[in-house]
Length: 351
Ligand code: SF4
Image (cartoon, rainbow, N blue to C red; front, side):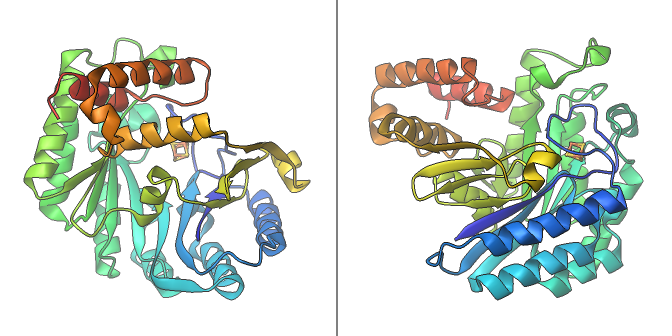
């Protein structure tokens, strides 16, 4: 089985963030939250879940609540479920939290994968979006590798305010030159995530597609597998947890607004703290055959494994694209800029 834990606290609010969270880490709130989380995990009573294959600490900023809290949750999962061979335990982290001591503690608790939010190495860009500086980013990776992590991801976001054309590619090159990264994610900021204040600060159109393409070429040229529209990994270092989503495998989500897919049903915890503390679910549905088909096709597009009939039949693909836009319009899926560029590639036969 696979599970994730939502840690909905951050030290600051990034200008482009749309996640449900309490922007600041407040000790009493964090304490209360982790007590509720412990209860939620303890209350999960399906007897036949099997061993844990992956556990993913997702945010928010999981690294902002300290290694001990993460360790306590891992211990609880160990006692409750036990681990499959080669289990993957990932923690999402922001650079300012990654001291060597912190990284060593995580390793001691069994964390074997780190996903670091870099976003840019241009200090002007980082300041504009409310994040730390590039020197802190480099120190963070030094700490992670000194502590012995071998499976480390760097997230980059293309299209942040003030980023120059070529800036994201330069950041990727600088990181990969200096550190033995096993994984990189290259996201394109969704146009809708842009606050009004940032208007006029980004490059547009073809240059955006070219930047994404240049990042892709660089990583593929380094031997990384482009295994999902925004994700690249050295062979054998693909995120097992995230692959599970794209293969539509069951996952249990714990914590505020966490969503689960479990035995054909989708359910989701409340996104407000008070409702979450009362154990309220906001959505619970049994998936219809049509929903499953659409999801399979969407995941197929993301992972370059489209159902055979879509690949061989362009008319069917166009029909599917139409379905996709409708699902987006109705708020059933969020289509990112990267997807749009990628779909263009498929339609024009480039990939
Ligand atoms: S660190 Fe992540 S979750 Fe937190 S505010 Fe920034 S983008 Fe949002």
